[in-house]
Image 1 (tube, chains in turn red, cyan):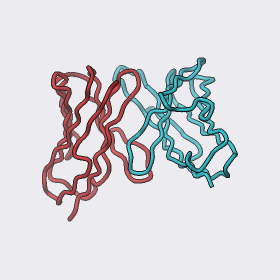
Image 2 (tube, rainbow over the protein chains, first blue to last red):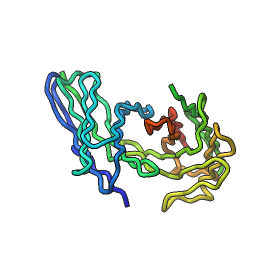
Image 3 (spheres, helix red, strand yellow):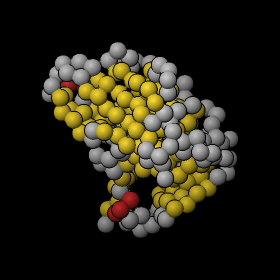
Image 4 (cartoon, rainbow over the protein chains, first blue to last red):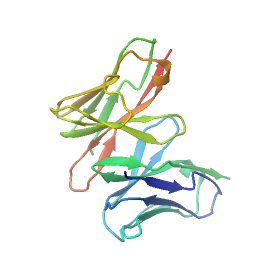
Length: 108
Length: 116
């Protein structure tokens, strides 16, 4: 059974700081997704990582994928309050399975 | 870009009644749609995979007679919560596989179901 483990589950950061969210998964897959969810809303797609070594960046967020280690990271650079949200990684093997989510709070 | 429309966004119903949630792909054909359930402050739990023209595949522990899924066309999948109870209250989200070469998935806006 595919398992997707995400950590940390809760992250409180100060503005301007950097941090990394980790996503480990238990079975071979070359498709890793990152989503953002605001309270009461659905999911917003951030990144789709399709191959080993893939790195994608959008603004203050950068995602990478190591398929050999079955690990993806979401790096936050110089956090700002607007990044406060819950971030999910997900792995698609047929259907999509989600990590538990990281609730990020960025404080002034 | 690909859009999945989910309706209604919010619904309140009485215990014992049934509620239908619709998920439409607006500008593409979705041969496969997925239904998720999300409890407050929790992750998304896959309920079932819906393929056009065939029976849905339910995840272990999901009652197929309770959560009826119909995928009658390439642009519409429906989830009906039958004989709803307060414990069925949740946030339900559908998604569709794009099969666009980028292996993208697009999500509906979600339905907040409250059973009173």
